[in-house]
Amino acid sequence: MPETTATASCGASRESTFSSILAGLLLSVGVSLMLFRQQAHSPGFSFGVGSLPLVLASVYVFGLRQGRPRSYDTDLLETLLSGRAWLPPRRQPCHPIHHHESA
Image (cartoon, rainbow, N blue to C red):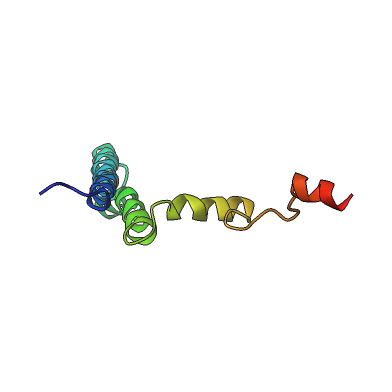
């Protein structure tokens, strides 16, 4: 059965979320092992700090990507940084044709 565009785009999203979780897991294991091998920190501290990348990646995927529209995460970031990502400009310029007709 041929793949439709809806399932094809859904597959790309799944690959992106899987790679985000996998990257968080790999970073968590690496940081945990690095801190644990230094023997300057307790195993609990090493595990706690090491688990932060996986927790952050999971929050990102399940909070901002899973079940949301395609560009929800970037639109939300733009809104938080600039405050007007989803809104039209404050001063909309007049259409040039309508401007000349009224003159």
